[in-house]
Image (cartoon, rainbow, N blue to C red; front, side):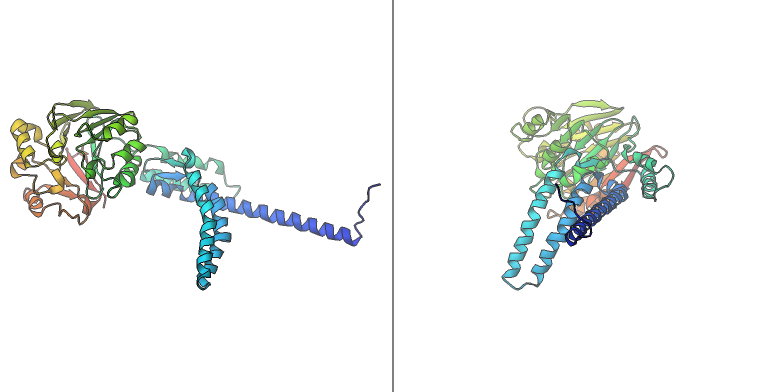
Length: 424
């Protein structure tokens, strides 16, 4: 017959005590995990509006990652590091190596977790009223149990997903990004987007990956209808591979020789490739785009002379993007079609080099606003003091990205003139 434990026997008391301790320990562990999950839940919700505003993304994998990372680093890695700090040589090196060994599998896990498409939610930079609505939703969601209809708090976050307001039909918005010593200009119409140059690539500052792509996301640009690369120099086209890899591009238009590898990269990204040539024209949402340079046929020998010159025209608002053209090309354009050069906004050629922006050219363009895309204390000395003085003497409103950060220009409908907004 099976033995029946007598609760009065000493052995039974030890077994009961062991079971009770096990149950109590399991209950405490479960409560700790629940508290930790609630803390991660609160932190994720509380920071969501700020990460959306600052980084144009919300991490969905963050709470899951922290569930592994926080206890592992706190309870395992950090104590080993603290011991290593006080140990004498050579024992300290062995302890640091052990800490690194303990950290390596966690980093591999986090890297794999971040690789999933669902790991982050990318969204355009929210407006002020969307931030206020989300903040109210956060406070509402984190209220104590029993708060009225607390489950509906996430509805207050929906404005975060709304795209930023687009330009009205018949006008456009131009944003010169701060990419250091290089060029990248985003042009937006009511339903289309064009990127003129893509900034430096990994050979310099990786601005294409670090600045241009995040800026496209922050501005609510899911697709580029055209990527225009003025010419093949690294400070203009170096960031193009990062853009092609991160954002769907419908067409690549460039002042690039046939041998340039970007044509193959564009084809691999399902972007139609076409060389810039004067006479090309298209119309988006009531805005006229026209290429003024280079001519069709073989490209000139100098890379800067390949530069696409793009004119963008809307009623009452014209912009001229010039790449790195020099004085000889400015003269050719002036003699060929001087009226076509007239523009309200001028992207200064070759970052303000003294080889460009001649007096007759400026007399033909007569811009209200001139933008210098230059790097802080760049080694070329751009913009050249004489060129800067040439613009200033004409009373032109000047902006330069090394001092002003990103620069945005769009038509002020009330005043009927372009308005300039500096990021800083």
